[in-house]
Length: 171
Image (cartoon, rainbow, N blue to C red; front, top):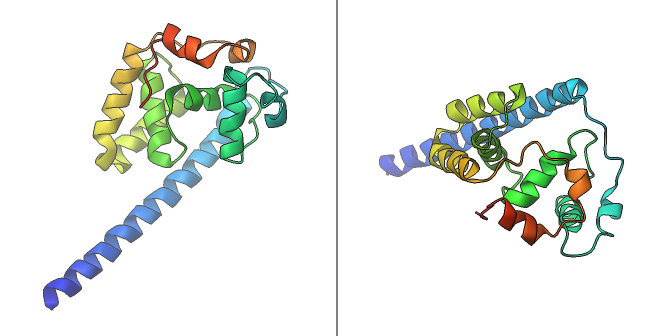
């Protein structure tokens, strides 16, 4: 009887810590991404989710529109490439997958303060995902460099052709 009470309390404690971790990291990412956008010097695409969904079905633009629709997002001005990375790599939008995407991009050669901050948070706050982070980084290293491309100009490109050309393997 005492052992089951202890296990129940331990489970509740661990669940609470995981929830606190998610809330803390989510709020931190939200704050830092707002700051990051202010210092990012790229021109917004000026395109809506509805417009993206008008692209032919096999294109990067259409798949980006579907991703945004699925998650009930609109393109975030000056950060549109980030959602393209989700579409191309298959990483989801939960916190651990967002961090895995940053590890992928680091492996692919991208460097930014936000990326490094996300990786540090991953190392310290998500030790239970360390293996998936290392796999993501390795996967990024095996993919041709794609973090620097002008994706707005590539929205009409076939997503399959693009993934094959850049050696992007799905998860």
